Image (cartoon, rainbow over all chains, first blue to last red; front, side, top):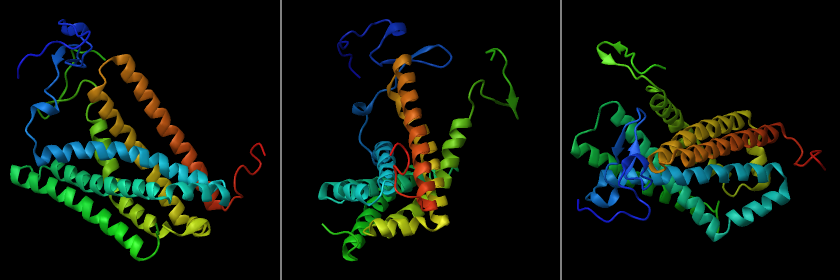
Length: 157
Length: 135
């Protein structure tokens, strides 16, 4: 990795550096941060890990939406109509679809982590298969779920 | 906690600080959430297009209300730990990190309290809010 000029107010003294190139370990020692995204070659297990984090963050927004749904329901028919008006609109349905995708992927990738935590599936071949499988599961389940909702007439555009 | 004392179990050094507590909690919460997520997808399917009356009827079943409350609380517990890991990874200035972690914790507590409050009212068939709260 080539050395680049220090950004902004970055200091050469690791002890007071604020650029994030160094971290203070819990034991008080200052250590350089490991290289970030742009340094590594793209790989499916890397993609799987990044997606797991992104989908987890998006699902936090989903938790807020679910509580808003409960709020609208608890405030009666008028409030509920307002909520379904927003979240039943094409944009709202797209958000729900995105959250379904995040949920299905995060579920599969979470099970993948539990498998790894048991010490299984850690060879490159099986780790790749688990990552690819999680992505396929997320896409297939969420697309099938929403195709079903439209085909049974539960959701209409 | 003194830094000099080191304890060992079966020759393996035991953590001097938080240990594996958070690690175990993350795994435990995700294990609980696997069946609850599948139930949640099925519930979402049932509630889609059910309308206001359909949703109220769904809450008429105590099992649905209890499972939803458990799903919400375990999800928020899991979410708090997950967001903490993200903040720990990217925010290095202690003051910013601690502020952000505090706000995330506060959000989770508010969502938990509000969510359970609404679920209980819906399960009991209470009148629509504000229903006496400042009305």
